[in-house]
Length: 289
Image (cartoon, rainbow, N blue to C red; front, side):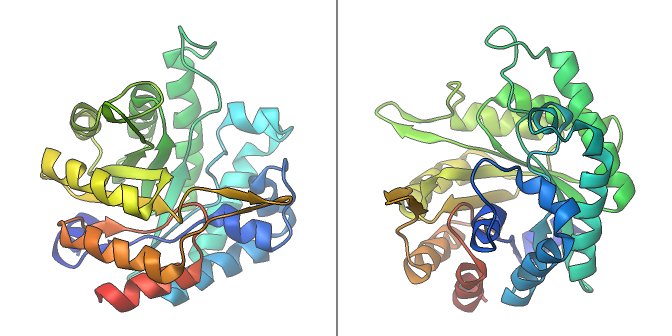
């Protein structure tokens, strides 16, 4: 059964936060998490295994910031191929039959022209380069996530499609405003979801920025706007600072209760974003399966 057929018939559960888990393992603020693919690959593998053991169907590679523009800022530009390749190897080493590895692709960290210095051509080329490394390393699909600019998400889709025929999932990050939900660049729910699908994404939705209670409202809007599979990955609430520590207030039970409600809306693919751990995914699995 292919991954979209499985999403439609059985549903799929994504993993939770990689960053939250890496911080628990000792990653210091300001250091690129992708460096640990080289420095501590076994830690990355064990995090993936913990999510699979919790019941996740899909884990995403530790490559969210592994486009060339972002790695160059971290002084890792010359390690781009190794970082992406090892990330896939560690995720695949943790997987077993009927489990999937998604090549994770995030924003380049640069604004597209005319708001920034990155041209559309450069963005597409950057995403194509990363996607080619991920594809060759053996991912099962791609997930474009935490995009606040629809045009950059579309550039990522185009870049991937230029080097691979694998399925593409795509999620944007929205904020709730007085006028409704929109990305930082003003992209609205209905038009942006349809644009992602028209560009070739096979499942679309939202992740990050908002907690599971607010995401319940957004998920309903997304579900009503399209007929294709929907992806929803909330944060464990809005981040709060306690001393030098950033914490997320939603408990695993509160979070998974809301995910169950999101599933009842007809959302096929669910998981967690910032602040969620394997315990959150395990709680989701217990309540919806």
